[in-house]
Length: 173
Image (tube, rainbow, N blue to C red; front, side):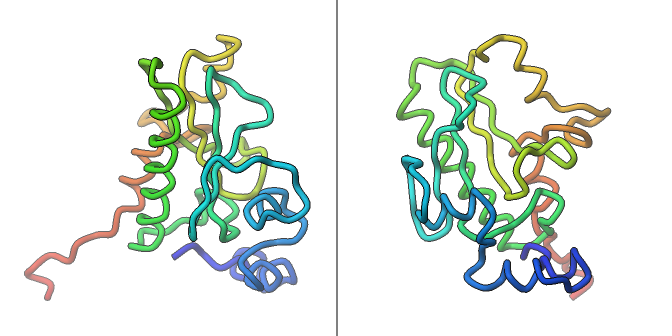
């Protein structure tokens, strides 16, 4: 389960507001997720996530998949069945949309920006059908660091590895 916001900001008002209905009223992605006061066209909506076009696309097709619940960033995800299931679902939705809308693309990229490189403090999966437009934008969606994903952008599959729940070893039962 994602870390409660009131633990992140030491019990401040933002933490309590975030848990009322699961969203922050001033968060643009929460507004989109709740379909309140935005003109954003949703490409997908279910009980857990919504998907829509990025307003500043960096590729042939560039979609965002966001949880309806306000989770600030990948740093707030834990090694839990709930968080693993949510990110898996986000990835499945993104793949489905791109395969439907950009079947001619041979390359796709799915991932998350990590603080301080994220633009909005609401978890969002970037779903890109390549090529990048313009081509230099690939830098923004590249993993930096020795194992990829420590700095900047982390691919969805690497994040899933990081948050996959541990199976208890039989000898510890």
